[in-house]
Length: 478
Image (cartoon, rainbow, N blue to C red):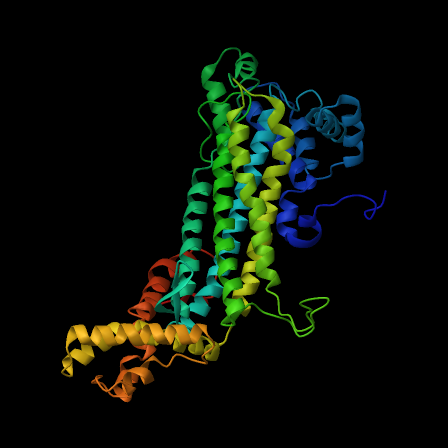
């Protein structure tokens, strides 16, 4: 069959990066298996096991030249992927045939390899999140004091600024970075624990020497780049670790989905839109359309990732006693796909954040429709100070506000509340004075200052942790 005659995951074909695809590739996975076999054999040798030096030399020399066709032949015969690769490695390193996988069970290799790859994949997602933060930080800084309608309950509320709203998206991502950091820092190695986690085979290998068994676990753990291993396991590491990891990954997807929903609604309002290339087609039938397809794709992929998070807890909950095998096929799908989809989401999100287009004229027009209503509390106070009776002023505002709102629903071209009040003989404020009171910047509170403070206190330290050009970091400081 050709690659056009069989199914291929859209995550591989269309969405995920080459870097993330490489992490979950058969080459990376099985090279990692060989690295673990080598680290195990080296540690066993150092602790006195009968491991020939030539075996170690050949194992080192053949870490990456995997004959996948030969491994597939073995797997068809053995119906066991780990043993297929044990034999394939042994054929490449014949001096090591007797000692590859010595004392180990499959999970000593596969589970530890999964944790190595998961940790690297979390680190890649962290870099992606930081890239989005850099783009959104530049956007927030540029639009820090541009008033815009705030919304509660999806209804117009008091004003905020375009930049301040962007910091809400960023706050979620900063929290995601902290979750990633905690996840990476605390992710343990399974360690070398043997068949049911008792280390019995290694105790036999070292003639009952418990100290050597403990040291074997420590040495292999350190050799593979971890500072600690789980103190106890069954045959596998607890699948609660998978649930924790997918919780972090799904949290990123949820943050991105919230961002994409806001962008889609803002684009429907005509206030802000995602980038749209010169030759891009929005609709096959409606040539005028400018659909937010990137944000919609973020939402679509995020929904998929969010569906995988409960799957991990469900898998963990049915791992009876030391383990069952009903986790295996599920994990082969769920864990890589969650990372690949989230990688794609963050690439899209960075693209959208880099090219967001703001339309201040539309924003101001929408503010003008709502701001007179929001200004009525200050108008009431100003009118009383000009000699009006508080209760009478309140009633005039109530009556004219209701009439204005009804007129707008019935097709009026704008909000003429101020004009209606000015025309009322009992009203004490002039039109110019009312317009002065209703300057939009009077209604944004500390939004602009909050942007500056947030970028300096919460975002700049995150960017300091990665390889970012100094100008990019400095641009986010007050």
